[in-house]
Length: 143
Image (tube, rainbow, N blue to C red; front, side, top):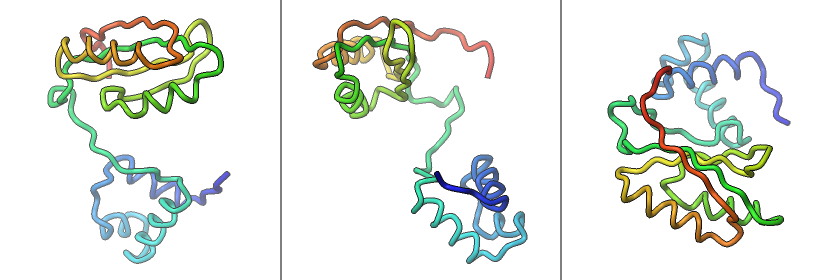
């Protein structure tokens, strides 16, 4: 387990709020040199604390207007194999392990209902997928 000091936690909080901040802005906010902030970020990436950087889109600007939750039941002990296959599908935005009847909960994002149908067919054809159930996400009420 990686131990983070207060400065690392403060730096991560600033990056979560806006990862595009220039190093000079981060350094000023943390009262550190630019070189120190750069070295800390590089160390956090090396240690796997920061696993990547991404773009967060406004909901109206999303490129995938069709969103769904798909519940997946897996046969036997095929969870790792099925998960690896699902990770290769760009339409699968997130994969969550869960308890209960379903083994995985997938967040699906696609551009059209036709693409959603094709994605479901692709998921159902993965060896080890026993069953699935999907729910389209309609109006967003919060967040």
